[in-house]
Length: 214
Image (cartoon, rainbow, N blue to C red):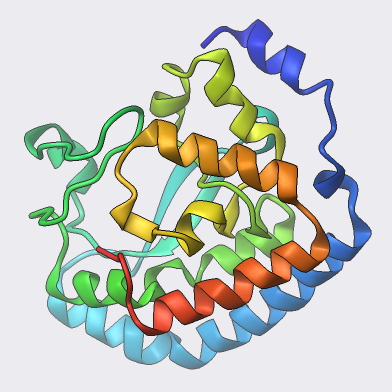
């Protein structure tokens, strides 16, 4: 991906980026999410520590709105040297995204965290800071973005979200990157505050039945 591509797309401002109503929902949701995170922190801390040595939290650099980089936070669901082991694991997804249904780097507790999406609770801090939204696109890594075409770059015209079109309508069962991009761009077309709320409630339902998660 060329730097000029991001410069060009950043000139366009998607209405969701400047929506005060969306930001208010984000702040409210983030505060509620952080409260839940605080309540669950001790049991999750103990479970992660007892299951696998290393830090309880995991952070990684991701690309957000217009490709701006930020540090994302999660509860650690993999072994501590997971990034170094990535090259040893087969990518079962197609395109600029990495997925493996039986990833050997995922710990036992990590499998539970991922099925229930509890590993993503710390991302409410990113939402409160304004780096993410409750609803948006999946935040890619810089390594993924450097291989993007100009079409792929369009998915970064909105803030990345904890959930979004593809999470609510398939979650991890969607394994083709171009299909994810299509869903992301479809979200941009259909976006409204009401639609965001619809995706949030739909995501809650999907998480509760643990559909498509790994």
